[in-house]
Length: 398
Image 1 (spheres, rainbow, N blue to C red):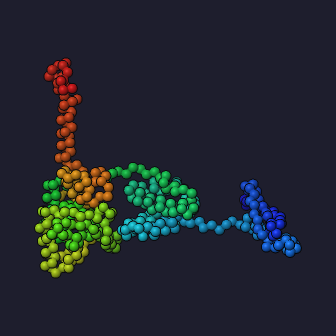
Image 2: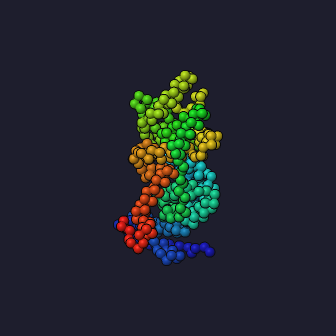
Image 3: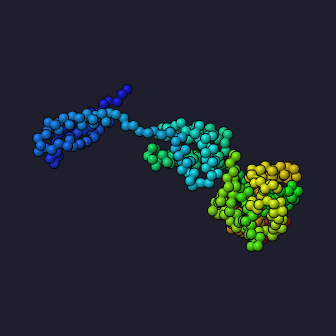
């Protein structure tokens, strides 16, 4: 059913010497009246009232047309805002992060939500979308998608397309915290011996990962100019990442804190010097530390896959390449302070060091159990032993 027409009424008045139309636009649907006024441009002193009345009729007719014509409002699709948000972020984020956002958008977000008009979207749309995606994707994956979705909706709020960012009210199930594995010192020795048997470039990659705690992007980005043998320093200041067939070399690290200087570990220096000398002898221009014998660059994903095969070949417990970084932090934590471990690994926040990367080894857990056992022997459980030996007498230790 069509909405009732809005009506316009008006009169001609002398407004400081000029004939002016004062009118009212009445909306029967709401019962509200809006006042309007417009000058005809004719002066009262010039005896132009008849011409002013003709102008008034034209003005009132125009007002009526405007009142009953729906304004043309651009009703944007959600997909438009998703694309704009990623494009805007591309000037601030690393190329690898932007590529990941585009992958999430093109694979998941746009096919499912991109066709919706933002004004018609509700919290339920997002809840239904996430519920469906949870059948095949992890909570952490959805949280990354949510960053894109929430950012796009926030831009729509700023443009006054929608009043609030309802993505703020999405409820996610609690994600299971991933626990990485860490090798013991004995397992590290076995891993390094296996890597030595395999040769380059996997040996260099594993030495840098498990001894220095470098991420695989940092392993591939390390250059000889970043290692100062005279000063005994190693600078972590470059990365190499891969997205599809795209190789991305960065003059910066994952975070500002990841850009760090590490003291060279004395036992690794002879090996690193021999590696550099071998590359020079082969006539390879000195650039990246981890390279193929013919000088070609090594892909980060190759290091991950090759290390898995090495573990299988030598019967070692299978861990991720990133777990070698966990291992470095765990072994250090036995004797170093948490602050030292944070600086060594290049964590932005010390809580990351304490809660995520450093794991108790079996012998540490046994030691903890032994400490608790000694405490209990001196308190609660002692009373049971004492009651057996001295009858009803109270244990003197309690």
